[in-house]
Length: 322
Image (cartoon, rainbow, N blue to C red):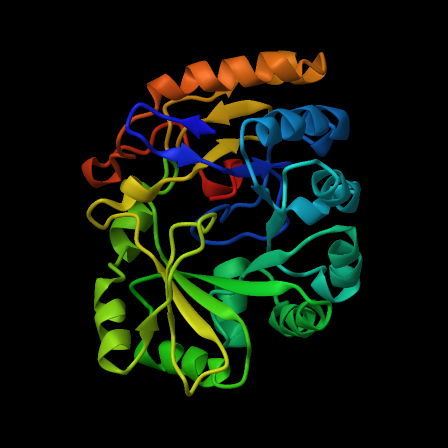
């Protein structure tokens, strides 16, 4: 089992397979994607070497992210390769959801267990304003297909200053009959979005207090779960989660490492730089990957230092999938 110098154990890998995305979310890629093509990123053979090495080091859960991972033509093959790696027993993906209606059944058949979909508003006009795409109806239809396919569905929504009580009420009404987990995520500062962060950041603590006051109960976290605090209510088919990276001791429960689509290991979402693994991956050197990652963990910091305004080398969240 991978363990750092602070006693934290890592059995969860977040693997980015592309930086590309065709949405233009205000808090991520407001001007659209203008980076390398998918051909520049890890190929499926390099990914298989990576998965084998991490599985042998105790990784049991893999989240496939982007950018938008479904923009890769071999996305379903990557899911299947992950599912067929001994030791990996849970596979999730993060997506904008525009291809769910078409592909959710194929992804589930390939071995996907969970999909996290970004939906920042249930109002079609507001959704289009935030994302640059008028596809809310298409994505909501896709959620129904994903649930039908047996996928565990979670919805990610970024907390913004213009987050109104009407917007929250619309989500709560939707959760009455919709069996998904809706997760509110505090906006995180990145290198290209200092001004947007200063204008729009808000804490999730008041929302947590409101939920508890209205009878929502905490859910015990899975061992391989991400950082969300999740809550359930007997009157609702869906659950609510909160991800609050600016809260005290957020990093104490860190259980995940990240590998970028370029083949760089990131010990934290906000690391100063990635550590290049690609020469090991290209050579199919599983033992080299294991030794490199194990030794690199000695440099993992106790915190992301977001509270001090440190954003590291993360220019925008599409670089590493959040």
